[in-house]
Image 1 (cartoon, rainbow, N blue to C red):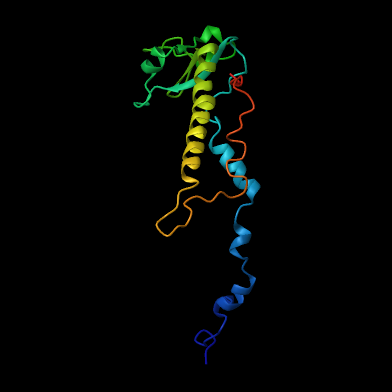
Image 2 (image 1 turned 30 degrees about the horizontal axis):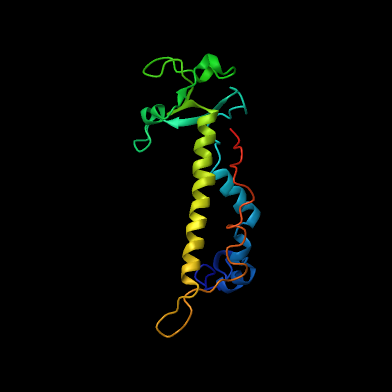
Length: 184
């Protein structure tokens, strides 16, 4: 019989699938490590597409990038709240990001984003409201709800609330009534 027509188990030098199964790596080995995943998440939420603004580049002001295409949070609304555009001559080293024509001439821009500044006292007030006062109020509401439910029982007499561990922990024990100073 001619060798071309002869049926072979490893035709063309290929191995059987069962022999390959033994040499394949387990799928768990292909998963990314916790550290790699953490780095990926960190990279996902950082400003890698926009130029980094040096800290305290304009003393007394908080700087941030605002989108010209966001219909939910338009720039004119931010301006009514106290935001002011940063002009190219205010920030050395950003002359290449100056808008040369159109509605935002001489402002600092990157793609559809514009650089704005907010007076530090307004920034501190807003940050204290949303990142100190409101979380404390919510913690107090949760504490009151738990206190109201602690003695409550269902129709079978079973308790409706069961605290695990130390319950609320330190949420209900704020160290100070003063809001922290937020980095600008």
